[in-house]
Image 1 (cartoon, rainbow, N blue to C red):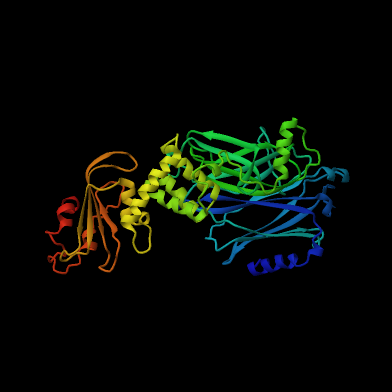
Image 2: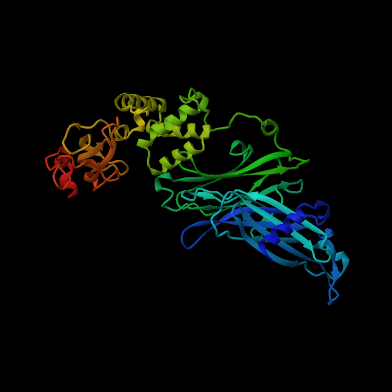
Length: 502
């Protein structure tokens, strides 16, 4: 069938709801598949259940009672069609009408969307009774398939009707849990969580699955599953949470992995509804505690430590963002990724947690003191290196000063023939960032990209792990009055760095 005809066909049924008499429930979850080229592609999984009472059955040539349904599924984005599938489903045959009552018509399909996605993915689905083509069910929905695949990330969460030791895993097609369901079963997948993405220093990693009134906050403390891993977080997350005590209402299921400082590395949430007219009875004290939690839809954020009683209480969101930027010079790669994540998507509670835990690690007895000492260093850096409207800690010289401290010697060169203005920082002794190796006679070369600039940029260093640019001469020397090679053998930069890059 022509793709344009398919979309028209689907939209036609969507525009005629009065004809949609099949009773069905459709659910979907976004998983991801890694291609041979190492690219993660969205792989939506669709699962649906059909009420047999809404179908027209017929007797086949073997005198069996059956029904047939044609299913059309199309995925598209702003650029057009991404994938299509068309097939016929037949119900299991029954010998008599009474046998129809035991039918459980449940189907599940998964697709990989190979083409790069433009915006959100839209899914169109039509189920048509082949014995009565006017008896149809239509379903449309959009899916956000964007994910930062450079870091660990979760698939969508999926609710299960059952998940047992026999290996049965039946999807729950609706995000709705009724009286009969006393346990919430769930499934998710974790991607990109290898040793190259999660540093060994982050372990032990904690995986938490929690219920809440809002996404990723106001966690219900008695409804949580926690697993700790000292290495290799499993890719598959399966589990169950007893919900007999969970009263009727709207909730979120949240999954996350967190490093040893309780800072999230990856997380995912999904909305679900609960109908429970007969909550389980519990002890009186626990009942009061849970009742208060469940009645409160506007609670303050529940944390292990009340941040309003710490040194961070006085800081607003803008100030917290600034503090995170101040910490970049002294954070490792994983902490830097976490900070960059916060700067893109701020979360006040977790930002405060990260900052508090960082300084608590520096001084377990008095993290406020550790912050005060570091902030004093930042004030010093701001006085020395403020430029072009940027705070000193955001400049290259400020970054290196915060990371390694005051240099032993600073050589500033502004009038040298044939070169742009530059500075050489020399450290007689320096502790390499990261592996703590002691280095002697470490050098940093900063320069101004033009005579009009007011700040110096880092151009080259002899310290492993920092910017090492063997072609630094091509940037520093302009050739005006220098040697034919464009360099000045008598320049201070050549005297300090020449032997290291020849």
